[in-house]
Image 1 (spheres, rainbow, N blue to C red):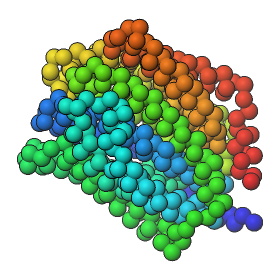
Image 2 (cartoon, one colour; image 1 turned 60 degrees about the vertical axis):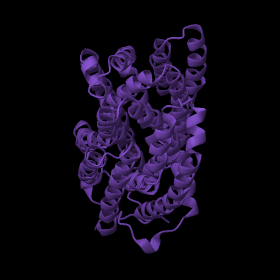
Image 3 (tube, rainbow, N blue to C red; image 1 turned 135 degrees about the vertical axis):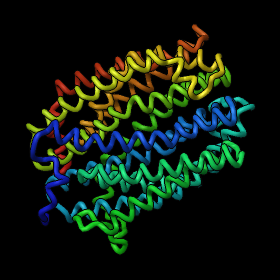
Image 4 (cartoon, helix red, strand yellow; image 1 turned 180 degrees about the vertical axis):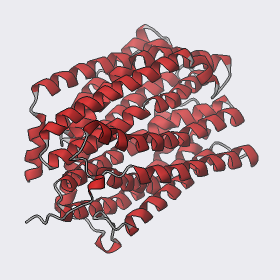
Length: 456
């Protein structure tokens, strides 16, 4: 029998004005993600300006491979957040507690595995990507050092996922501000003052991740709310783990599939040399900032949908999805217009080499006009994740962003051996995925699937 316990209304999203709740939840996430992006951007800016183009290329070539390995486990954290949000919305605190402690225990196991895999396999994976020999030693150093901090990275994402699932987006913001400052200070100290190599940038990131995890975990240990963590309860509950995997594995596989496609694209970019790698890498950092509003509304939508479907509020879900998707699309395109206008100056912030700027500007101006399509796809996928339909998001993105994108890039670069052919992979596949989600949303009874899953 379920035990229903009253919870604080300040973190519930099942009542009140929808737009205001989404914005109130998303705004701290936006600020937090700005600081999160400072992790990688500070690395790139400092590395590019102090250590040169090849060091910047090493950092850039490692980023897609890093996300490939951590993406699956981040998907598990998303799955846990959906389950927690569902039971929190239904005010079933006993199940909230079981899910939280099961996910934290699983995170420790995952962190150990990810550390071993990342450190051991880095040379093999980077060579498979076609990383140039001039860049390879620095890429390996960055990659291996980064993965020594895997435990903190995994557990921090789980802890913030717990807080966000219950509607708390403020405390993760505070912790990110602190850890981002730590990261930038250490970057400047290790590279600018002490003259250390590219691996020290990854070391700064790893240390700052430990700081953010420690702060977040302390909050959960000492909270007086129903989601408080008790070390004595850390164990794996089979039912909770099954639900986490049911919701999280499709999200994780989706992340891996997208990352795999991006690794293939990165391998094609690598073929054009270090300048192309550095230019496209600079764009990827800028794009990360551009997509922050989208990411934030995605998180808000997932939490909103899971809590309201847990409470049986279908009417609020439909309204919330419309508001969240529209906001993401409009904001993403406004930012895209600004990036297009200032593209040369933005790329030059990372590396003023004229060849790097030319490659980066061409890549950027091909992609950014179509940001609204990417925003739409990610927002719809987030809403479906909150409804327990992670498998639909996975298959939609797998087909559009991997099955179609990878063959396109492979064929296009053979027929047209220019970097522009690679850049067009993104707008083309974003268009196809948008059409898929429009058709699915209009035809499918996607909210009932959530209720069936929750009943088991």
